[in-house]
Length: 359
Image (tube, rainbow, N blue to C red):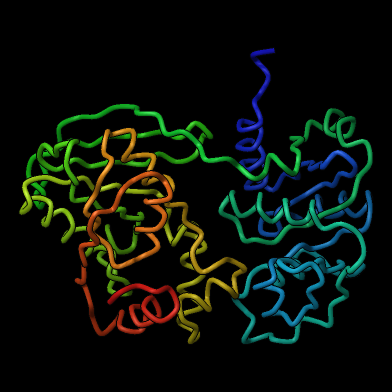
């Protein structure tokens, strides 16, 4: 029936449920489990989950290493929930905020037997909801019947791995800009119900020759507040000015705050940096990878706008690689080395040393 939700629509519904503290049901055909986000679970729902079986906390390998929990599944660990542990204990596993002040959180009993595919899908799902990558998982039989009886969203494990989504144009309008001069702002909406992304055309860029382009990830703290902890704001402004000086260009503003982990988790990482950890170390302690962004979005936007070749304003070789994988020819990498300050010197050094930026 056409009124029934598609897999992508169910995925977006599941993300919203987890953000509100509501569990979802995951299945891989032969087995099923209830999944809740560690960050948003409350005591009443934890008690209800306990009544259905033995909860396990799924953590990424990065977070498990920080906690000194044994890892038997390669990229994740399954920590058994003690009988006397409550919501605060779960939060302490998921959130590293008090790791230094309360370092002894174990010992942990880590599950070794059985398949971890549903736990892996659970972590993938809470990550996509921009929550801390830790999930409570309780095995369940008759997934379809249980989901129908309780009204919970039912997803297959495969459906948590969202495919590359199409970006549809919503509107474009003329926009005069202080730094870039005359231009147009295009708004694109992904079909998976995610946040919108923007393309800013400067001048009248030609489609039959390489365009000066930049993929810029949203940075509320740098772009809006003028944060001195990063070089994002100066790069945004310098990129627009360079396009005006060149006569034309296109800036893609991708809403992937904090290297794809969201503003709340980015602020958690900032708090960890105040404790002495660098950017990459802070992300790992939270349970994330170095960089969770999807630069395929940039290639899709360029294709939708009719561009096939770019001169890319970036210090990040990974952006060049990802664009070329997406079918966009990068004829030149144009360095964009601005915004270095005493406050962000360590941050930039980490980008060069651990993320391969050419500074």
